[in-house]
Image (cartoon, rainbow, N blue to C red):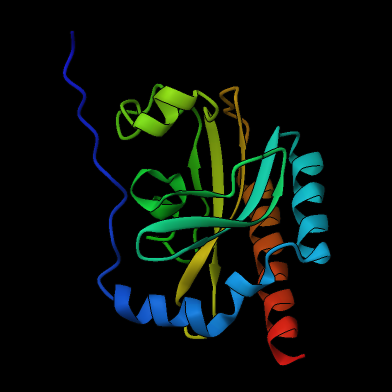
Length: 171
């Protein structure tokens, strides 16, 4: 019997301000928005992954407000890869093989569910540079070919999500 060592996703220093930004964004009210659903399906097909989602992070939970290839919509933030991705607000966070990456190899969500090997997440950043969550693509198979072009395209989709959220908030 081995010892499981797992480090949960870090918390941004300005977490209270980030949480206020999440609430003010109206993102959690955008669940089931057809335009967001179209964007995640487009991402899943474009990048050839089994799953894609728009993820919004509260203090304790990760809410998937738009999904393709995913059935569950709420996860513990402590175990989420998106929790790591928001720590670099303008960079795409990639994990080629979560099982081989020492940061995630013992993550209970990845071990028990076994559903995520590859992950790429572009932070959803508001006008004040607060990361609200991520636009992410992920797959059951590891992947080493998610290069600069794919990362740029994923960030463009994340920016499109933020534009859509602003439109919904203003209407």
